[in-house]
Image (cartoon, rainbow, N blue to C red; front, side, top):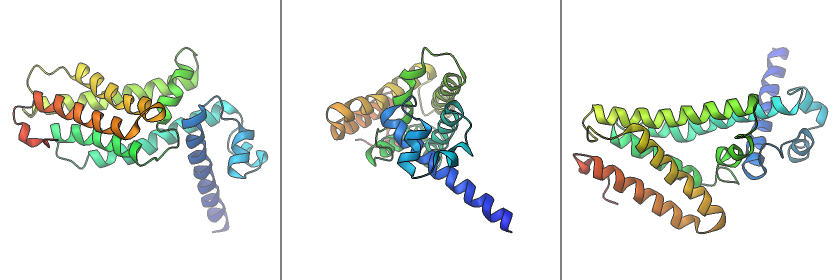
Length: 210
């Protein structure tokens, strides 16, 4: 029992540290994520951090994994409760906007913050980030294809093209929210995706009007 309790405390401590790591990275990027910086932010000693991660790269990789888990739980999970088809596709975009609106991360989006750091830097971190982005785009494309199969989007709707457009409109919220008008960016992004889906939906009444 003592061993199990110690292990549970260790897991909780690790998750607390990773949560802080993802929050810091959403503002400062993964390059700014050092064991020393994290020790200061969490109040955990460097030796305590080394018990979990032998070096910075392992910490960065686990931060990516935690960010994927957070996104899956808070964005993908809620969307999956909507009916399959065009409503689920729009619910995914709305869940993303809610994530941004609620300020879950101080920098808005972990993945948007770190992708530019590693796009030209070969290595394990770049590979993991690339895989997570491919999986995300694959999820959107799959939802588009499902909506086409269900007859809720027109037959010639291009899943790759529509997924690209939805992703671009989601990312623009982050760009505008940090430097311009975040509240209006949320409205514009929602309306743009909604208008695009309603135009491609044989039964637009499945979707909100605004």
